[in-house]
Length: 421
Ligand SMILES: Cc1cc2nc3c(=O)[nH]c(=O)nc-3n(C[C@H](O)[C@H](O)[C@H](O)COP(=O)(O)OP(=O)(O)OC[C@H]3O[C@@H](n4cnc5c(N)ncnc54)[C@H](O)[C@@H]3O)c2cc1C
Image 1 (cartoon, rainbow, N blue to C red):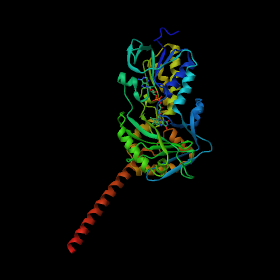
Image 2: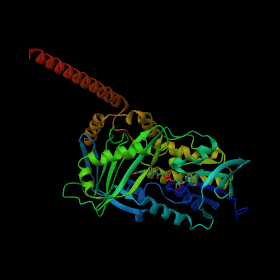
Image 3: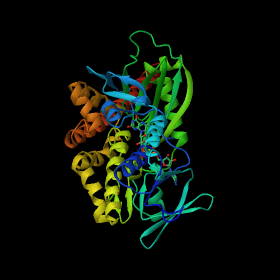
Image 4: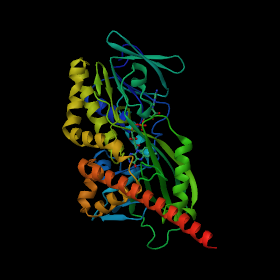
């Protein structure tokens, strides 16, 4: 039994995929009393794209909305790369449903409680956290797993570091899209190149089956504040101008809005005494493709397993919890370091550079293209990207000089004509 109805061994704030994956792992690997605090489970992005094998590994097949045999990158100036696979390596998920599947699994343990509430404050009393909930209730636990996503609950209360960049997404799900033959295959998902006009973070266009399409764009900024007007304006421009999808979507019926921010750039350390950060709360989405579903599930599970071991040892010091970060670093350190260094460069590229990236992408084998999407490897290395930036800027200067010369030569010619007349 817990010491009291308000005392638990592990408290988890946030019921997205990261918090629920951690909850399932703690419950499956220990006898710990676990409480998960969230008012509403799985309300992040309704239909994210992720990898089939991850969905299989976590037993989430029932939440699959659509499966994709092909994957394509399309730049706004018009270059396109296509990659087809023998099987269906990518899927779109019903996020909320996936969360409910995990919740049901966690609830199989009688020691698990879902507290439908919102955590408002966090203080430390000796070796315990005191988490205040809205409504005035307090819960206590020696170990806190912060899976509160972009709300960064622990970082906010304890003044910890936060991710450097945020991808602010805005899109919609369209229904009744009549897709003519050859326009857009139902089993191909598209990523759209970044653009100053539509969103420097690039966009997405996923058919969801039965004439439904998810379409949107993202703007990456250094501020966690969601710039609604900016992203909505750019999204609307893309909706009118990004061919050929603009024509297809114009025939459909705009439906639910998909919007939110993805924190980019891991905030290490992920562990402190009695505290673990996971998922978006730790900035674990890939800084290159901004995919956070797989990191939330995988890191949530690792976090939960390490928390279960710490519970067994009754030792929640950072030294003990650090194993979670060590496991993360073994797989991710190199790719994330590279991706995080390149991120500020990557998100300020012109359409021309994105166009060249797309051409480079079309030379990949299908497996390479998938690996780049998944393992976060930038398409170009730092020197090549650096050269692209210089080349792009030189091109812009050249065009300005050319336009200036043309304009002044024309004015000169007009003056000459006027004098002659
Ligand atoms: C529009 C959009 C499109 C995306 N597209 C993709 C994609 O195609 N592929 C992909 O892999 N990833 C995508 N992502 C990113 C992915 O959805 C996230 O990285 C992932 O869902 C993170 O999971 P999480 O559990 O860490 O956070 P979340 O799912 O955000 O869960 C956090 C939970 O914490 C709760 N919470 C917050 N503060 C508190 C508090 N104080 N008290 C109690 N509860 C609290 C919230 O209610 C929420 O349920 C997208 C994100 C957005 C916004």
